[in-house]
Image (cartoon, rainbow over all chains, first blue to last red; front, side, top):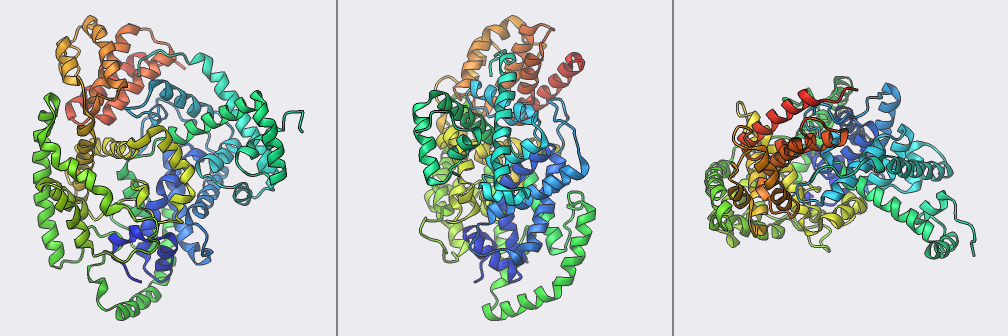
Length: 202
Length: 416
């Protein structure tokens, strides 16, 4: 099975993985393209900062590439990769314990989108934008543990079992921690909400 | 029948579809008759839905660089400019490892080539932007250059045209937009599509479009950047990560509806353009093509939906310059125009002028605040400015927005 690069967009993950295993390493680029936005999002959720997310994402791809031989055929690449990203991001978080909270006034590094701009789409309903900003702020205020598990569930859309495997905790812990994280998120949103009246047309 | 409320664990697990069938029906019976639990679930769904959509990704240029950097690391050939992106520690280790695998891979590749004949002649390397140097490449490069000229001319023409009237010059791009799904969508049942001849693919939309549409198509094809799964969700074959991440995507779709594709393109356009402007020197063809593609996509997107009085009409009515200028716009005029500008913006008719409207709205909010801002107003104004910078299609708007932002922040930054 050979395919010009432009045809690779048409191949299923399995086939791309087979190509990479067979030595066509450039087929890996297509797998990267397919997963990079979701991967970035997950890493960014856990690590907060763009630079850290970028590091974690790249390291995750390198790890995934190396581990591709062990990849179970028939499994979907996306969730598998998401667990790699999550583990990489979590270990980066543990190692560095970076506590830099995203600030609205942080200068935007390359490719970075400051918190205040993440919600923005010119065509969106302004009330929705307001709500999004609120949700983002509430999320940012959560503990590392809660952010991580919410990201795994909400952004990576992993099953409880996958989350348990990723975090190395029992299923029951996933259930209780996730519930606490969600309660905390709602609580943060409630706390932030009254202060956020509409002050500006958006 | 459950009389007490279920635990949060069970309630959320129910919503996540993670409960055993018996427990599930038990919880369901309760939830359906308990408004408190229903509300709680709704709140949670809302919050998570917002989180799914709230985090805006970095621009396409970042993802392309990141991909190149990754490919450099895994293939052991660090691409130029990727070194900065690749952390040295892991990078060097990986390069060593990959280097060890290289001879084996090369042997495998050779034998594959023997089996497959000379199929790899036109195969791109992992990160080469242009193929080897056979005729197709030369012809394509030439037509890409021609396409650049055509598209630029088109865009310049329509830039003026649509502001006053529907732009006939945009027809080509619209045609292209309609034709686009044809060459990117994989039929649902086509799990293993036959390797389609690329050249035929490239020609296909051109037949349906005008000369300009064809030119843009060639340009797109030649950019050597196939559409990503994220950009073209429908292009992904079944049983892909995109299928597994479908809830995330569909959540976006719920909110964005049919405009989703256009919005994503707009985001990348917004991201790519300022950068293109800032990197005029030493820019390579790939970046230029990216920028042009982004611009052409944005143009194709905005043109067809334009209706009713637009930005020029509103600014004309109030005697405002197209780009805000503090020396020429009295505060009173600004405040009078604010309502119309806001409406323009909220109804999506600001279109290509979103950045300019943003700038005006920031100024109006600033005017209303008159020097004393609470934190929320401050955020809102900063937000407008930043978006204006990001969305700006012309350097003047970007420059003005940036200047006003800096000015505003330096004078009003909260003391914390």
